[in-house]
Amino acid sequence: MRKKSFKYLTIAAINLTILTGLLALWTDKLELTFHDLVRPIEFLKIIGFSIASLVGMRILVNYFRKRNITKTSSKIKIAALLTFLISSYLYIEYTSKFISNAIINRQFRNQIADKIKPTKYLAYGSTAENLSIKEYQEIVRMAGFIKLPNEASNIKYLFSYDGFLPDHIFTLTYDLPKEIKTDTFNYQSKDGQFTSSQICEIIGDKKRITYNESER
Image (tube, rainbow, N blue to C red; front, side):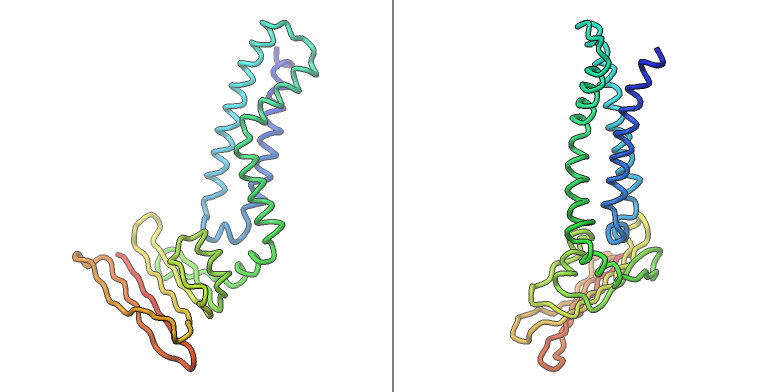
């Protein structure tokens, strides 16, 4: 009985190992900068899919018995196919991210990661300067920072936050051509917990925009 179960456990273990390897490959330095819990969270998903595949294979064993399927190679192939189908969502997601992060955009993402430094005005955070708009847009895609016009250049940000609390500080500085219209404002919530402001100044042939946001 143990020998019969071992081959199905081996299939599940191989599946788990491959998915864990793909997870390690696509979660590069840049991904971990903004999603530091991505690996443990995704690994829990892998465990969940692995358990589901074991349940599926258990159902499959009963099917083999009813259909009197005894050929070992056939049972292994069907069990492996079932395991792959159950985990196909993760294979598709992880493979696409691996191709994007580790192959196509590897150099670009490493270039961004090299510009980012840790900062701890609060418990956690990061800062970077001299970002191009393309680099900043990649950061926005992961971190959810405010979007900027395509004409923005010389971008600098600082983001610091206090764990699971809403407390945070966000500062964004960038240059725009002088002819682009921009607004200045100074806002504070009624309870005084949230503030945001934006100022503009002319520096040479550029307009320097500084945006500040904080919550406590």
